[in-house]
Image 1 (cartoon, rainbow, N blue to C red):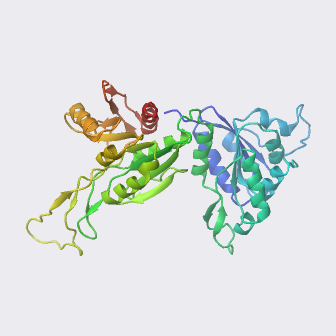
Image 2 (image 1 turned 135 degrees about the vertical axis):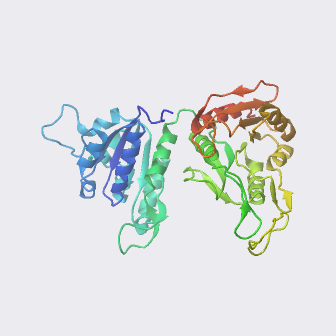
Length: 403
């Protein structure tokens, strides 16, 4: 799948903080995704990372002098504002934030920010005491009112050996990358909407160390949550601890293990949701009585008495008001018949049918082949595509049911 950043122009301002090394990784990821990057550096930033590093990664010279010799035809500090689709400053120091908030422009990054008319994203990085300073907070509030965007800072360890952990750590490059994609994503049809997504396989214990589960990776649920965020939604991702990989950034994560915990989380969020997408593979049964201690290995047959878990999708269908509901059906035979029955019995708007025996839809893979079923419509068979593409298509189909 073509990246959202393919062919996009990203200005990257790097200012003088130890987190400047993270800007190197961010640059690499943007270039790998097909984006074109031009880097602007303050004098202090060059104390931490050499301009040669960025010019090697981007294939472009770094802008770091306000008055280069020989002088160019056009003013250096105005050129970036005519080129980029977005201006990202990572790290954004307290000094840089103060300059921009107060209209100062005495180096390349701050002067370019004054002239730039596209979206500006700042990733602050500084000592927690500096971040909590009232002057810094006033400057941040002023920039937010002007429409500038922020990501972070995060709570964590600081760069200095003797510094105390706290809020001030720059967001990780992956999170900044996701935020850039979000700001540049053109279709914001889910703006100001609340979307609840479930992801992963639930685990139903029958003793303290063993459980009943399935092979779902959670990747499709993560893709749906990430795509909903890109499309402007406020996203709540109810994600099992068994899901693999890092969850998407910019969404609220609710961690669960069992079907009962997932049911409680869905019921808490559902009343204020505009859309519920049940991607998670919820166990259909659990042990009627779980052993308090580990069941010892012995000869012979171990018999477990199982009872059904709550049908969360059925509950949602019975308790819906104006929410849009999308369910997933994983079938290995009689695909359309079983999925159509689920669509009708659960009182949902859309069922996304998946066959895990297909080579394009194996557990844990990055591609999927879905068939979308809607009431009074013929099944829509989609070709094999990435899970991100499938998520975008599914959200577009669900948007048609909004009231």
